[in-house]
Image (tube, rainbow, N blue to C red; front, side, top):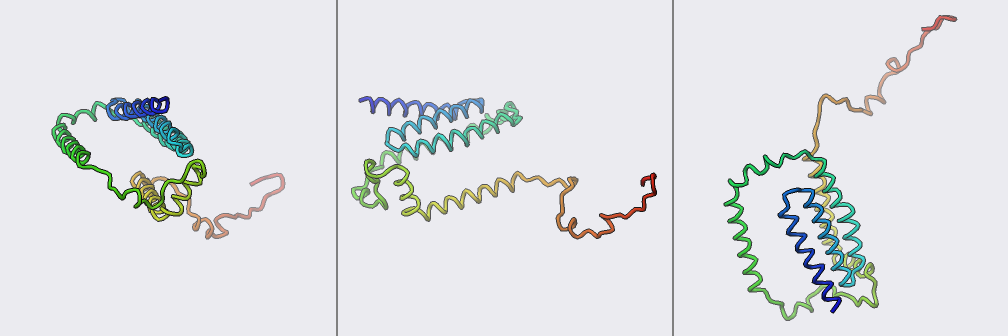
Length: 203
């Protein structure tokens, strides 16, 4: 009974936090609600017996991604009044898209059913928690059964990182840049001068 109540508590707070992320007008508040949603998701993983995944959610998503979002939002000088000016103009299009997506999700859930042979088609069934630790089970699934998909996901993230760097790169021709080849190939006459110094005179 306590396990079920804890699950419904975490799930309800996670859903509420996700709704507040979308509906909050202040982006800083949205990021804080997102952190709360991540914490509740980690709590759900703990209830499932996946403590290692819960720790990864807290360390990676809360400790890195969400905090990075928070710092970026707080550093950006965004004029929210100008962003809301075109709300009424695009409201009918957004409402139409939302209605279509809602109808598709409802139709999907009405026709959804579990295949009778779904459990036998799994590439790697979940091992017994009492016999295998979370870290070993997760490593066996990722690096043995799904290693190709794991490498493809890493490649996609790498391409996304390169794209973000290219989109944000700004080239300023007025900035003096270091050219290693020109520095190494400079003649001795440009970098060394022999002067005859008079006694008690100086240069």
